[in-house]
Structures are given as C-alpha cells and as structure tokens.
Amino acid sequence: MTMIYHHHMLEEQVREHRREIEAVNREAWKWADRRKARRTAKTASRGGVQMLIAALGRWL
Image (cartoon, rainbow, N blue to C red; front, side, top):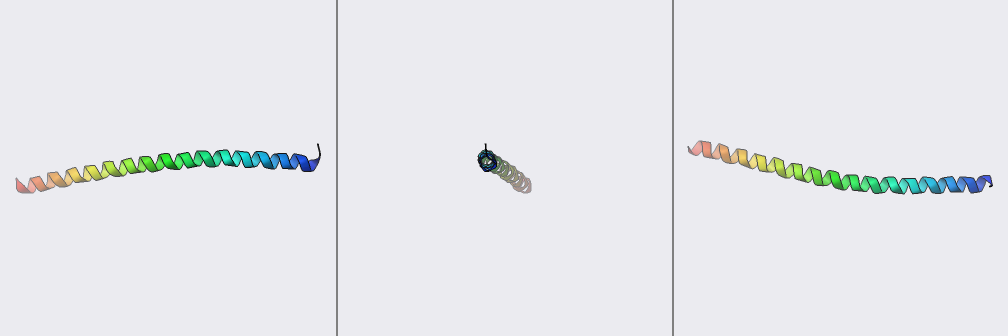
C-alpha cells in the first residue's frame, strides 16, 4: 500500500465518522427542541393556572 493510498483511506474514514456524528447531532437537536417545547408548554400552563387562582382570589 502506498502512503498516498493509505492517507486517502484515512481521510475517507474520517469523513464517514464525521457524517455519523452529524446524524447523531441532528437527532439530539430534534430531541432537545421537542423537550424544550414540552417544558415551555408546561411552564405556560402552570403560569396560566397561577393567574387563574390569583384572579379567583381577588373575586372571592
């Protein structure tokens, strides 16, 4: 095996590894975004309940 061929094979392995990492990162971002959206909705819901309780407290 020549040194140039060996270098080419290593470059190809690095590219393949980078593609795999990018795929995992894309999935991680999707998961984090879904989790953030769920947490935001939960926080908004909790805030709405607190506002409702405060409004009812003023009326009673």
